[in-house]
Image (cartoon, rainbow, N blue to C red; front, side, top):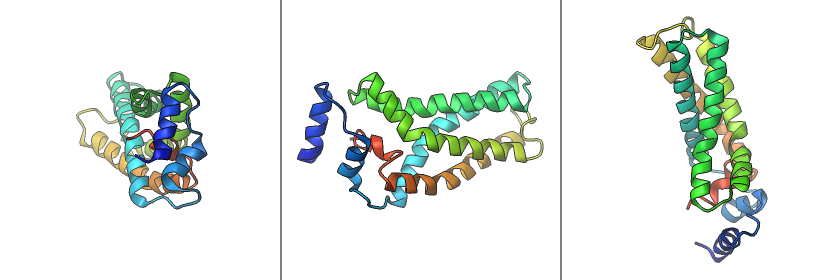
Length: 178
């Protein structure tokens, strides 16, 4: 751990202000440097995990209850945001970040990524004929859901690469992932 990062961590642990988004990004990526595809894919996979938990749970609940497309998508989106943010909040809290700062960091890190994923994966599900009406025991339901999440990952990764390269998005929480 660099002395600079250790100093920031010490300030944070002793109740002083957490590093700013730009500062946290610079301490790891350097100002104005490009993010690697590996970093972008890792950030996207992290975000996709939370989204997938919410999507699967939301669509399973909605399908089991016989909900129509609109309410099904609404439940899936709400749960995707909940679990997407939760998977960022838990490590931040474990690192000693206070609730207020952790929530702000999670919102800054994941909001754009989750929005893009939700538009893409729900769009794919809706576009596949019969996918939203398929039963939970149907290969159409699970195949469509898997395809929608794969497409969401492929669309969101380059967006995250660009955002991280600008010191934003997942770059704001990367300093706490050690």
